[in-house]
Length: 315
Image 1 (cartoon, rainbow, N blue to C red):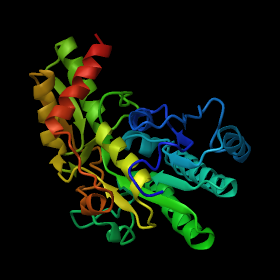
Image 2: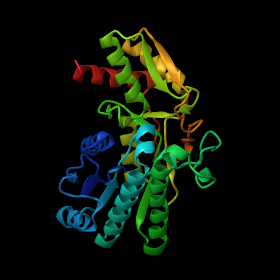
Image 3: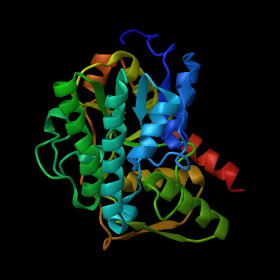
Image 4: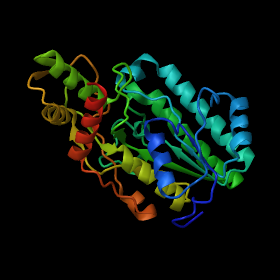
């Protein structure tokens, strides 16, 4: 499976391939010349159902699986539906990887989450710190469900010799993101709030938390490139961070989005709401060394593209 063109002739199935990240991964694969890329739709294949997953493998007969399907959201959704987020994500991963093993899939790429890291991980987060504590409480059920897929991946590699790789991306953003206020992450949530405030002539926006926590963000096209590079070139069982190698406070992020949108009012920080994990920034050296990935999209430019995309679709 090594080599730049290792995927071109392969039958590839991308779960979640119609979603925010998945659609860009599919586009990236097609741009590489991959002609056999299938996207199972959740209406037809419920990945929590073993029978549906078996049907998926019978129908598509993939040689490579990129498992991106997930139930995901921001702090609000994690507080509201921790049970669903744990159960659905754990069950999807368990079923899709186990049935891939039974179907003789050559390579399985699974994507975890930065939420899997302990709450007080030293910055920058290094892969070897992954098991040194419990995740931040508000998103621990989601983070642990995705972390179990690393245990499954490494167990299957040891017992069955299955080539499963596990990637740990930071928070993603970009055109096509989820802007639903009930479940969105911080960037689309702030973009929507600022755009709506401009339209309504409002002078104040309420933002959760203190604004002091930091986050790292990766443009969706860069994330897709990292996943495809890893699928082409990486064949080891150790997890790999996928990030841009910087951190920004939520307060500075809000001010940047405010400027780019053209909102002239003020923010009121709701200290009664949680900040989430205090700091996030990952060490990206392993991805660079193992499969040559470096993020290319400058953050401000990525934000501009995201805001323009949202404005155009919400005139």
